[in-house]
Amino acid sequence: MKHLDQLLSGGVRGRRVLLRADLNVPLKDGEITDDGRIRAVLPTINALREAGAAVIVMSHLGRPKGKPDPALSLKPVSERMAALLGTKVGFENFSGLEPGEVALLENLRFDPRETSKDEAERGAFADELAALADVYVDDAFGAVHRKHASVYDIATRLPHYAGYLVVREVEVLKRLTEDPEHPYVVVLGGSKVSDKLAVIEALLSKADKVLIGGGMCFTFFKAQGKQIGSSLLQEEMVETCAELLARAGDRIVLPVDVVAADELGNDARTQLVQEVPEGWLGLDIGPESVRLFASELDGSRTVFWNGPMGVFELAPFAAGTLGVAEAITKVDGFTVVGGGDSAAAVRALGIDETAFGHISTGGGASLEYLEGKVLPGLSALEGR
Image 1 (cartoon, rainbow, N blue to C red):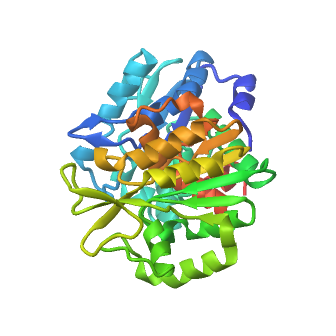
Image 2 (cartoon, one colour; image 1 turned 135 degrees about the vertical axis):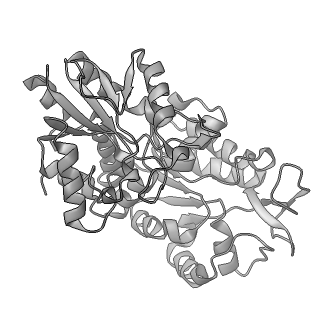
């Protein structure tokens, strides 16, 4: 891949740069609740501005199904970006953009051609986007696993470069996959085993331990013959989990206690259990599990964490995620938070972001890279 610094060294003053960012931020009542993805792309935007480029930023937001949806407009993002940059950000208006100025296009997915599986349709949209600028820079790591017009097709139409964020993410993932320092511990959470199965398979051959929490642990419990009450279960994955446990032995570590509740809510009755009673839900790992996971993390040299340990958005079920996150911050080694809900949990729970070696912006993209898949956005930047 050609990097942004190579573009800057050749000079971009007076040129228009089309920058693909991942500004898919969470919104509540029209307000941004976590601006981490906006802040992540600022170094690339500022480097281009300072070099005299006119920067046209583009992104998607949510899943508007190929038509305009006011609730998914990027207008609030443009306002937050302007505040963070300390300069005006034009929204949809880029006709008179001057060197050093920034504009943001409306949500790309308002046009069905952005995500179309028809190459001709995507190509036509990519042609329209390419006509706006002289150079393309991709800094949307969270979208590089998508074969979309603004990620894949456009790189065949303009000189293309990887932004600082994409370069950093790839460097980190190579470090996790090609020659990780041992002991190497992987911490996985989230709701579905099926979402993480391929990454478990891929990392079992590289990691010394895989610690599993979150809703997905109950399918493993079921495979062990444990009672899980009304906890989240993927029945079709039980046999697969049993096979993984048999193959991995003590390299897969499961919780030894869980926080069970009679309902999902802040006012639910809770109890600490080893097996979940009938009619109750397992919603977080318990304190003994946090201590167990912390002991497994102690002394590790490489850690990759993806997925919360419980329903951290609700106070009664946040302690497991907080406890494991804090244990990771104490690791005297290279620690990576794998984006998505894990990154959101770090910020929501008030954990110092600088205590981790790297917080990824791409949950799905990170996992697919670790699985060994070819990511369309990266292959396009590499000219493949």
